[in-house]
Amino acid sequence: MTNHIRISRTSSAAKLAAVLAALIVVILIAAPYWAGRADMRLMGEIFLYLALASLWNLLAGYAGLVSVGQQAYVGFGGYMLFALTIFAGLPPVVAIALAGVLGALISIPVAALIFRLRGAYFAIGTWVMAEVFRLSFAQVSALGGGSGTSLPTDIVRSMADGRSEREALAYWLALGAALVVVTAVYLLLRSRKGLALTAIRDNELASASLGIDIWRTKFFVYVVTSGLTAVIGALIFLQKLRISPDAAFSVNDWTAFVIFIVVIGGIGTIEGPIIGTLIFFLLRETLADLGTIYLMVLGLVAIVVMLKAPQGVWGFISQRFNLQLFPLGYRVERPKDS
Amino acid sequence: MDLVNAVVQGTLLGGLYALFAAGLSLIFGVMRLVNIAHGDLIVLAAYLGLTTTAALGVHPLVALIVVVPAMAGIGYVLQRAVLNHTLGDDILPPLLVTFGLSVIIQNALLEGYSADPQKMDAGALETASVALGPLSLGVLPLLTFAFAIAVIAGLQWVFYRTPLGRAFRATSDNQDIAQLMGLNKRHVFGMAMALALAVTAVAGILLGIRTSFDPSVGGGRLIFGFEAVIIGGLGNLWGTLVGGVILGVAQTVGATINPGWQLLAGHIAFLVILAVRPNGLFPRISG
Image (cartoon, rainbow over all chains, first blue to last red; front, side):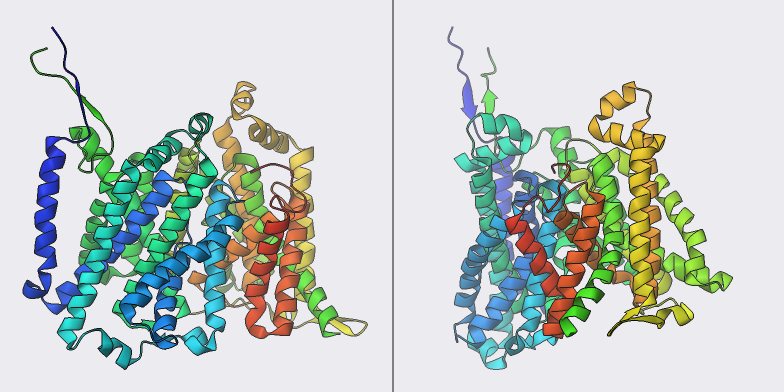
């Protein structure tokens, strides 16, 4: 009797999740027709944080590049949006895309320098880079120097006619960015490069001996992540309409929160940042009145998760129920009668 | 003349940066841990100094008698209760746990002391100066530099002349064999962190006398200390002093050219050295 073993990349849970996700996306696309103004703003912020968290997760969870300086690219993207629309007269949407390209370009010399630092020192090196970016943009008096500047009203008006149309556009851009980032991370991890990355994550020495060029793989991930982070940065400051060096390069807003999201949700999984973002905003909306106490609780939760359940919430669920909603691996299926 | 003055002042400032860096260098050397909360612990020490001077009515330098053992105690407990559990081959847990710690300390200080800038009053010491030819040297910067030399010499002596230092070096070389030789590495790491935070206490008090501080300045102090460590070379305490001096001189010279460039010049000096000598000027151990 022949034993038919099938190799499959998906599972019924993943198929169900894909259908549900498609349904949710359709509902979210329609949000400008059913949601209020404040809800849309909040959802836009959630999408942008989800994108930042997915990118940081790719960097730290898969490529092992623990950066505490991604605010460098958030701020850079934001400033590029302002500079390209104000000085070059580009339409905001073009400027956002171009900010991503420029962000990827500038990350090349940055990576060449800070990749000389290893492990934890790499982390602080990225922070130094972010400080260099902040101090440099604070010197540019055309962009308001240390006190920052606002996006001129005629540029804002050029995006769409009415206020609600503009807000809908900003919302769709944020939603689109989150979808593009999550899909891109998923497709990257399913590709040949993704296999190499997963191997590096699991054992750097073994993957090197199998012929994976570790430096080049990490470099590639760093540049792609930086470019996409700059796009998200441009979108964040398109929503805010005002930029200043301290807001643009804030380590708390663009790195600390993002790290907490990923750690609590589950680092090194695609689902983790999604769960983490939902938990983060749930906590924020209920505890934000507590101010500093809320941040202390967040830091404490992150420490406890890291010490007691380093796989995070999603890691716990996926181990318990053997679940993977974004199928990355291969499963061997045996026919039931054998 | 301005330039000579800037170089001299920068050298003395480098003493403070070396004090920021010495604790980082020490714990990295012993247990390969990079403590992201280091800057916030420096600020915590400054606030402890502030409370001590206010409560006992003593001079900030006298407050060292209270703050140094207090910080050492915090360090030992912190290491045994939390940080020891993060050590291992994976670099992620120690980084993220100390990062969370940094956020907790910052916000706890914000809750306890508010965001208003504070400063310690050291009386006549703050303005006293001695003339050296055409230069005028502040007594406080001179004292800070002397403290830096004394602290580093003291750490060197502990490392190479005492049983504790032998335990540090043994666990640094090979943790498992050190365990076999009867050392409890958890205790050794606790002692290393206690010593590092004792140094941090000195750095925090001197920082608090020199400038005003608030709960958010920790990150910047961590970066200065880190740059001094990398410039000087990993694991080399005297190199750390040189690194601090280079950083201080770059900042003061940068500020003479354009006041806005002070911090930027320091970072650029660091990046140039990173580009030219990735392992720092006098490396002892590889990262």
